[in-house]
Image (cartoon, rainbow, N blue to C red; front, side, top):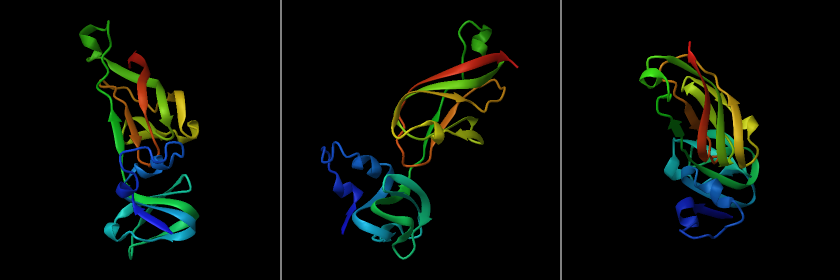
Length: 186
């Protein structure tokens, strides 16, 4: 059995440049990594006692679990497991200003009906006009997808017209550009 605190497992060099194993580690804080024969209970989590942790096993996010007695029970046996505190990443765009519209478009209501994102090495995201109105787009992304993703936004008419992009899983997300389709008037 190999059980390591993630911070000790990968010092600042390329120990595993091709395996993608590092990607499993860095998206859960204070994580512990296991590689070996298949297990159904992850132990060695005393430092996370009582905390809600994210569980990443055999390359898939398995959701959250609460650490009790320094361990968590896995939903299915796995041979590579990373358990740690979930990290939530949020992108909130600036209010939309339109060139050529009087007063930069601030007094006018706008609606972002469609968004095209240029992504690199990305797998999961939620997008919407507010944190209360977001759509999950995991089904549109293949494993570590790169390129353009076209999303119909759950939009509303308002003066700010901001977008929120949320990642609440340990999957990677790199947004290179955000290209909204905007209607003015409303």
